[in-house]
Each structure stands twice: as structure tokens, then as C-alpha cells.
Image (cartoon, one colour):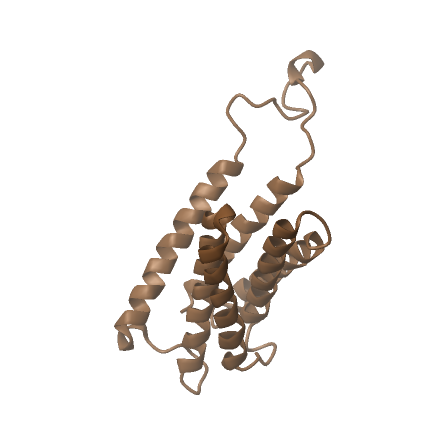
Length: 197
């Protein structure tokens, strides 16, 4: 990634943590849930490696990312066509894999000094980047809104002066909520990475 180095390291930590959590999720659940978690782990860990600042670590050749995310996109398309149970989820993963493939191809087209080619040199690439930015911005907004507590949800402890007004203690987050938060984090990370293309 060729953005500011502190942003790159934040993305490495965020995406690496999400990828590691998703990898842990592959040990339980139904076969469909394990497959879903494995796909998210590949995306999260791949994003973490791609976000490594080039000034700190020599990045893998772009061809490695092209092969990895090209295969991930083909797999996502196959699931989209043949697994009718979670079509929207498969579509989102396919778009994510295509976004990573797009960034890998931009890395491969970058000049020798390590900066991405100017978007004006490739109008189709700039249009694809813009469309992906809009997609992930909308995804992050909608996913964040779904995770936000409802207005009539109970207050958190300590927000009221009387114990009687506090209501029940908040329940710990469930696995589906944590998985949704991980997808939101990856969507935000994807948006940030696309800004560097």
C-alpha cells in the first residue's frame, strides 16, 4: 500500500485482528458458517499483508495478490451461482475479492519507483475505483446502522444515577454480532485502501 505509513500500520492491525478472529471461527459452526469464516479470514489476512507499508517491509510481488484474489473472486462467483442460501453474502465477498484484485492489478501497473499510476492514465481503472469506493462507503454506513443499538434499548450501567433506572445489564456481544462487526471493519479497511489507488 502506498498511503501514509501510520494508516498502513493501523490497517495491518485492524485487518490482521479481523482475519485472525475469522480464522478462529472456522473451528465451529455449520459447514456453511465455516466456509464463510474461511473466506473472511482470507480477505482479512490478505488485506493486512497488502496494507503493510512498503517502506517497512518488502511486499510480496503483486502477482501473488493477483493469483490469490483472482481465485477468491472465482470461488465467490461459483458460490453466488450455485449456493442460493446466502446470495447477498456471497455477492459482498465477491465484490470484496474483485476490489482486492483491482488493487493488486494497480500495484502491478505501478511504475518502478513504487507509486501507483495516475488514475487519469487509466480512465476505466479510475471509474472502477470510484464505483468500489461508493459501494464500500454505503456498505459501511448500512452495516454500522444495523449494528447500532435501537433507541429504546436499555441504558448502559452508570448512565443513570439510580440503580432502579439503569435497567438490566447489557448482554455480552453474540458471535453473529461480532462477525458483523468484523465485516464492518473490513469494509472500512477496504474503503481506506481503495483511497490509495
